[in-house]
Structure formats: C-alpha cells, structure tokens
Image 1: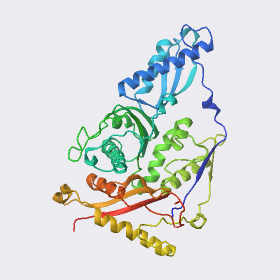
Image 2 (image 1 turned 60 degrees about the vertical axis):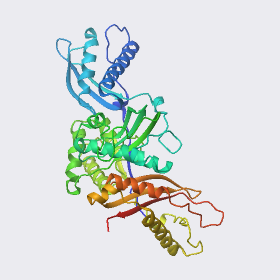
Image 3 (image 1 turned 135 degrees about the vertical axis):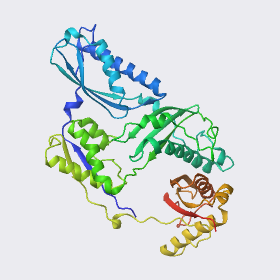
Image 4 (image 1 turned 90 degrees about the vertical axis):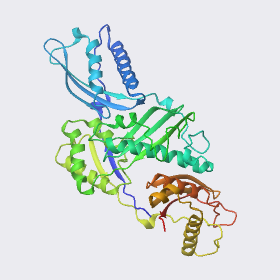
Length: 429
C-alpha cells in the first residue's frame, strides 16, 4: 500500500490581487466604461494570440506600469506563466488606448490578467469507451477496450516525443480538446516553472514516429478531450536547487498570485496539489516554503503552511481480491492473491504476441500496464503506466483487454472496483 503525505497551504488574506485597478481608457467618462473597454481590449489581445498559436490556452499575465512625466505609460516589469511574448502585446494594446489626460505622472498600475477561454466550452466529452475516439493503425484490429487504450497511448507518446526537446525536466499536465482531428484548446494545470516553452511543444504536436505510426494513424473522431500528464524527471540531487531557483523567482519579485498558481494550479485550497504523488518533491517544497516564511520572505499575513501526518498503512481498509477464473473462492486471502497473480501472468504468457519488428531488432523491455477491474468483473481503463517501446506497450494493452472476467469473492456479490498495475517482462528468449 502506498503511504500518503498531505500538505496544506492556507490562505489568510489575498486582497492585493483580488481587487483589480481600474485602468483609464480613452473615450470613457466613468470607471464602469473603462472597466468594460479594458475587459474587451484584453480579450481581443487574447484572441489574437490564440490565432497565432493555433489553439486557445490559459495563462496568467502580470503587468507593472508607470506613468512618465509626459503622461506616457512605461512597462517596468512583466510576467507570464506560459507565454513570455504575451505581456508586450497586452502592454502595447493598453498604451494605444490609454486616456493620457487621466494619467498622473508617477502613477503606477499593477495589473493582473487571467487569460482563459469560456469554461462553457469545456463540455466536450472525455475520451472513453462510449465516445467516438481516434483509432491508431497499429491497433485497428483490437477489441474496443484495447483500441481506446491504444488511442490514449499514441496521443501521449507523440506528445512525450514533442516535449523531450522543449521540456526536459519539469512536469507538464494539460487537458487537450480536439475537434475534427485538430487541437483546439489546451487547459494547462501544471507547467514548467523555469522554462517558458510549453506552447512550442503543443504547436509541434502531433509528432509522429514514422517507424511505428504514420500521419493518418489518428483520424479525427468528432469532439473529445483527453488528459495528458508528463512526470517530473529531475535528478533528485538537484531537487533542492531547482526548487530554490524556480519558486525563488516568484518570491524575489513578489509575484504572489503566480506563486499560488505554481504551488496549487487547480486552486483546490487548502491542499497543495504540487506533484502530490512525488513525496520527495513535496517534502522539499514544503521545507523551502517553511524556511521562506520564517525568514520573512513570504508575508506571514498572506501565507501559512501546515503539514498533516502520514497515513499509516494499517489505517487503510484491505480490499477483497477479485477472483481470477479457475481460482478457488474459498482459498485464504494470501493464497487467493497468489492464484490471482499466477492466473493473470499465465494468461499473458500464453497470449502475448511479440511484435515481429521487435524480434528482428532484438527489442524487449518491461511493460507496466494499469487497468481497473469493475464491479461486474470486466476490465476497463487500460493505460500504460510507464512506457517502454511503443509496439510492446501496445501489445501489453491488447493482451490485458482480453483477460477473462473476474468474479466476486462473495457468491452473487459485486466486486469493489480494483485498480491494478501489472509489470510484463517482454524479453526474447
């Protein structure tokens, strides 16, 4: 069983960013008009940026402006979470429509713009067994469960290839929205802090492996979205320095809104979402934040950190193991687990078909396939947990999809949904 470490970041006050300044727009006689024109102007700039990237995406923009002695605006400091080129476009638009008569020499503006698309547009279905999803040529003859797992794998694999060059270390999490085979929207919930080249990866997508897939391997399938996650890959020995460099940038520049976004991208206060599955990263981040709070670098009235105790393995309820076909349901739990594992591995040994091209090239590896056993004993949600070689991974998906149904340890009962990660040692004998 996995141990869980929960970390909380409590917001005590956050007023400096929640109340936006009203920026004076030329031709407006009151603040309501200026605010309305300001919103329209910023949305117009965002639309122009979307046209340039080819898809909509979310971003966080900060602008520090100052009025010079000639009542002209100067950009003194700017920040963008995703697109470093964006702030100058927003500033240029603001400067062109600023009401110079209403500006006072020496006046300063701190503007924060949350660039995002309409949440109502996120209603397209997540790619699943019941939706129309793209089919990869390499698995076109598989059953529908395997085709779905293969489609998810191919999309993820291609994006992995794109991000190898542009994002070598940091984690990336995003939700990709497609329409008629094209990437239309990207909602980013985790992005590299120290490197601003996320858009390059998405603009280069899809990248196709011409050996295993071709450019027509994923024909369009209506509208759907798929969740993508690329794990954090930094050397553990460099972890502390990485956290200090990355999060220190926000603290040194007092970018509290961006610090919050970097720590808790999904805004699910009070729990920190930051790589919660990566205990070493989370502990290192917590220790850094605590030290910064103690030395006064983070305003104590704005932030407080609290660590919760680790959950003990013994506190977690032990689930009944589903019964593999042919196993005696009356066996003791330990023996039932052994029969379950032997049954699955025996089935895979008999049914795994080593890809011919892998045989020719002497390619093998360890495949980690994650799947769920549902209440009715059927297999669902087949995904590769850790990638090896594409054709081997796809064969792992296929063979798991044809596993016989499992049964409940209680006669006539239902199975408690059970998630399982199975390592398959695919090596030529």
